[in-house]
Image (cartoon, rainbow, N blue to C red):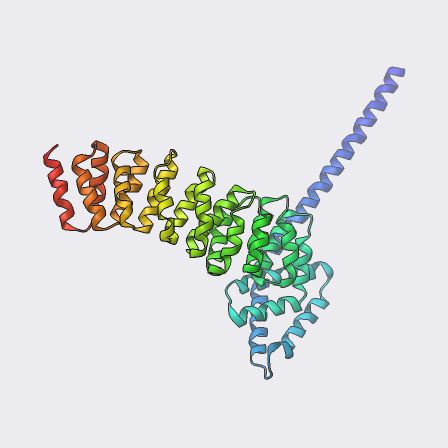
Length: 387
């Protein structure tokens, strides 16, 4: 009897447990179904909201521009007040959804505006309370919300976002750090460059592409901070700063770059040599010529490239030596540099096309064929007759 009674208890327990599992699964399924339906309805309504709000924002901007007075900040749009009242009448959940839609529309619209129109929509963004919401999202515990907020403030450019963005440069998520860095330079421009370079641990390829465009727009104003950046603890930051100094081409960067080309490790030395060539300061010629004798192949190659940018006649003999006897990559760099030296370089390659080793002759002929001078073909034919 005890055995039968024990089985009954076990069966009852299994039955109850099964019912509980079915109940939980049903609740979870219904919850997911409701969320899916809600999400679908929201997605279906999203285009309507975007259309509605884009027209409202354009109407408000056009209305304020047509108002008499000294400026739109002194004249409040009746349409803006109507929009505020519209949100006040909505329920809490619907208000949150539609305000988010309006935020997204305003950010998307601002991307295509400039000048006074850009400032006007930024002011409206603040008046509607969206700047405060973006600042709150910058402190969100969810990294994707922080990243999205960084993108938004990079477009709307509120000055209040600068301090939170500086904090996010040390964020644990790489994407957040990248978006914060790009937003910071969009808002604070050159004033943000120094703090940005001092905080960054690594500069990714995507970040490099974006930052380089912004920094090139700063021009010589960015040079001082970039020079400081060449002393960063991060190798990628140092390399990026060296690259940008070369791209800007300010002669004041020559001396710091020469120090790097002389004393830095080979990887950074190569970038410094290339940058010196782009700057084109004759005072760096002797150092670059010296680097053509380096034991490191990449350094010799970078020095050859730099000499091509400088175009100094004194470089032709050593470039001819590199083309005559070095690795394939160094020979190719030397050949391109000789081609950029005009007639002296062509004369050196014509001689190498007939007197160098087989690889040297091939490289010299390759670059001679690229020249437009008809006389460049004569020694090539002469060299062929000796084969």
